[in-house]
Length: 172
Image (tube, helix red, strand yellow):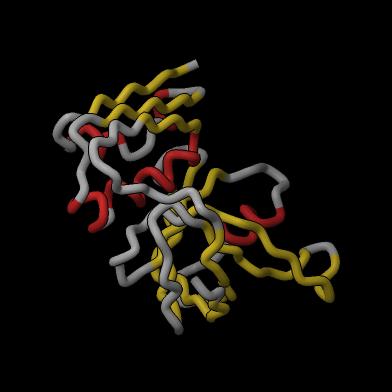
């Protein structure tokens, strides 16, 4: 897939837990991606506005969605998460991608075992929400999610709704 650089307008930015927020973007030019891939977000360095910076974030939305959703853990002092958490509906930034080869493979029989911690669940959420997953749903699926506190268990309802899915949250 070719890399696409495009303007992105915020349509929603809200916390889904105490420390994690989702941000939805409407893209000027669509970025065709496969579930599991990530994008880069461009922003100005708050300490040096002459300098551009970028950070990578996994896509949580499915490839068929009209908006691009990122699931982000707020990191105190993190330049990228601070910038993104402060964006409001209507604000614009620049996004490019897709990157990565971490995608859902559709060979049969296949018994995926998803292992993630925190917002690392985002690419798996993209996968199970995708049309490809719908068409090639596995006979059995296990998802192990490690988090520090119960309020950090993300997307549990979506995984639990799947047939033949064992969703195992592990709280430390």
